[in-house]
Image 1 (cartoon, helix red, strand yellow):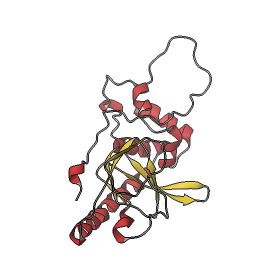
Image 2: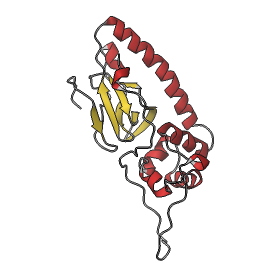
Image 3: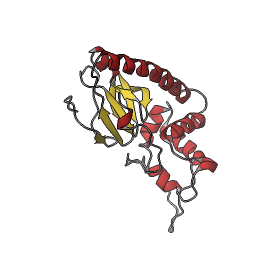
Image 4: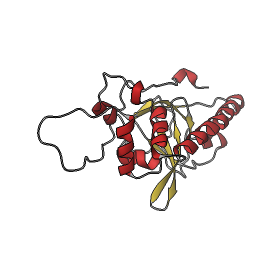
Length: 210
């Protein structure tokens, strides 16, 4: 992504990275959707934390340092560059980033602790997806699942196997719609990342920028 100061940009899940570790660039705020920040672990990537609406990413820019993590859309998202007009604004943003880091570190600890079902339930809450008795009866299981990141992405975020996450989703979300015809005997393939559905809660706004 260009480092030139610009207006809000929309990125789709599975598209190019927001920025890569080692690059220098701007400070960004997540306006809507979610962004994952990863550290390279050989050929794989290790999730470090998940940025939610209102969060800052690329905080290294406040210290004139290169990015430490690679950022990519976990779901469809909108990002806005955050201008830093002076030292007062920089200090205020650094304080916000400090408290934000504490919250997101706590989130990641929960996503890596306990049963897979409990970890996945926490992730769904962070994404704003209704589940169990709280799910809207008008929303079928197919629609809810289509709004989620790919199964392998969910599994990586909660440090579990895709098969285990698939079974846990069956417990946490409404059942899939029944379809006519013979029963399927082959496994359901991993879902592709799609546009995040409009019922997902979105906080944060351009007006929240310093």
